Amino acid sequence: MSVFQTTRWSRISAARGDGSQARKALEELCRTYWQPLYLFIRRTGRGHEDARDLTQDFFTRLLEGELWRRADRSRGRFRSFLLACLKNFLANEWEHAGAQKRGARTIHLNIDALHNENTDAVLRDQRATPDETFDREWALTLMRSALERLEHEYRETGKGEHFEILKPTLTLDGALCPYSTLARQLGLSEDAVKVAVHRLRRRYQKAIRYQIADTVRTPEEAKAELQDLIAILNS
Image (cartoon, rainbow, N blue to C red; front, side, top):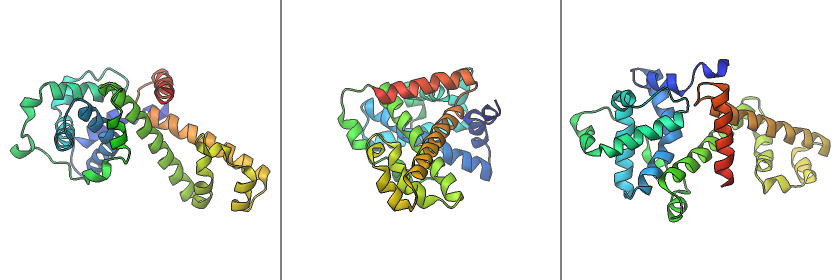
């Protein structure tokens, strides 16, 4: 249960304050959810510039507390809470027009760096609804975050090169890579490689579960969110 003590629910409150911790919480929130929210807005018919400005204005308003107060925080899933906030924001967009020009807090981030390279491909798929686009991008962002967390762990222990060689085994195509090839690259026996791959996959699953736990309140909600994640990725 300790993993549920400090979640995005508490860190978004920290982001509304001042100082380095608030800055860190704000940047983390933007990096994780910018792309899903931006793509949701694009799916509603906005162009790139409008969607980018609306996404930034949304984060500003959220952290100032206006949208925070309107939404139902009793919902355990941060994803549901955030999307509900965005929909409320867009429904009342006229109230927020020009908010930053009136002196609202600005998010000083490299916005272009927050866009993923698959943005154009996502938007070319006209079959997905805005909600489906948000969910799928959330799922992919969560998986990427878990992978980054795992890579950091390996590099911290001096095994960054091993991680780069074994990382393809986490994908469906990479799983077909012969252990003999990996063994030659790593200078290990095939049996040792099998153990290393098994350990990597287990740690990746753990990293995914940790990322999910960071956005809910209870183990039951974490289990439901994991089931949603699997269903979204398989759809």
